[in-house]
Image 1 (cartoon, rainbow, N blue to C red):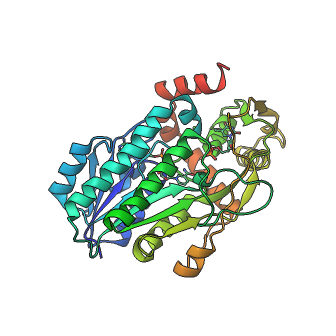
Image 2: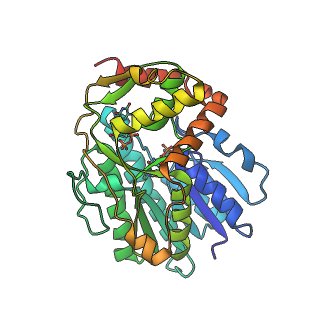
Image 3: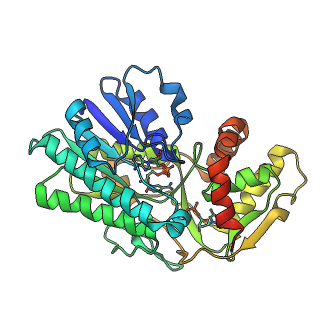
Amino acid sequence: MAEKILITGGAGFIGSHVVRLFVGAYPQAQIFNLDKLTYAGNLENLRDLEQARNYHFTKADITDAEQMNALFAEHGFDAVVHLAAESHVDRSILNPLEFITTNIIGTVNLLNAARASWAGQFEGRRFYHVSTDEVYGSLGAEGLFTEETAYDPRSPYSASKASSDHLVRAYFHTYGLPVVLSNCSNNYGPNQFPEKLIPLIINNIKHKKPLPVYGQGLNVRDWLYVEDHAKAIRLVFEGGRLGQTYNIGGMNEWRNIDLVRLVCRVMDGKLGRAEGESEALISYVKDRAGHDLRYAIDASKIRHELGWTPEHDFESGIRKTIDWYLANEAWLDDILSGDYQRYYEEQYVRR
Ligand code: NAD
Ligand code: TYD
């Protein structure tokens, strides 16, 4: 079992749930959270862990190769769970280069640092790269992404993640680096930055602001509760075969418009509003450029090999998520300040 586990991007949405799970699950190990604290990184997400004996935070930038080498030399990490990334498709359309730098160069810097530090001694070591189903491109009405589906990324975000996946596999084949990968569908749950669909809709309903639905709202996503993803990551971390990829998904497909209507109905009930009040806020806006129609995952490999299955059904997961956002007003209000307002104006107003 690894003794010093480096988790990158641990102050972000999924990373914060992975850090919490690992800190609790591996009391004998030291868990190091490395994060640059971009707009998406928030140490509030991990406030409850600050006193944990086996948790350490380091503010660092994965695009800085020297810093990565120095941290590996100082701490001697023997496992990496790599989540740090620029993660929002719309931002990647506005500024692709940031995604290339963080997601591709940043990943290579970590691969190089691990390779140099491990110096061919790979026993008990592991580099786990966390990726997305968006690398597979867009499905029509039928079919599911399997681990054998050919890569066909279509946004700067997914192209940068696809590139990082290829590089991780290249380090396995070329240098024997002990890698494992997973590609997951859309996550939802507490701590998600309110630029992504579900928290954005929750926040706008709360403030009675228009609910922007791209195009006709007919695009389909496969939604997974974030703690179910974190549990899958733990299983792959412990038992995934080296060089292998595991697809993770919710088996829970929703058209965007149906999902937005569901959130409206649940929130009207919780906020004591009249039925239909929030749905009236739905506003169809210009479609995302190159908007992928449908993502859906075949998760049978991880189910059969590692015994993973999601524990949350969508109804309970979405209620838990809404309750969390309603109970954590300060978390939302802190985030919805200067930078976010500027992004929102550029994305939704100046068309
Ligand atoms: P997020 O945007 O919420 O968090 C990303 C974190 O990475 C932030 O804490 C940020 O500060 C940090 N970061 C960004 N650039 C950095 C840098 N240069 N150096 C160090 N840290 C940096 O993202 P998320 O939604 O939690 O996604 C985490 C990972 O999971 C990503 O790799 C993403 O591609 C993947 N993923 C996300 C989803 C999803 O639905 N959100 C689905 C599948 C896979
Ligand atoms: P998002 O949460 O950005 O995740 P991804 O693009 O990685 O799947 O978006 C989910 C879906 O919701 C996607 O089809 C785009 C759509 N969408 C809207 O209709 N309106 C919005 O304001 C946002 C952010 C997304």
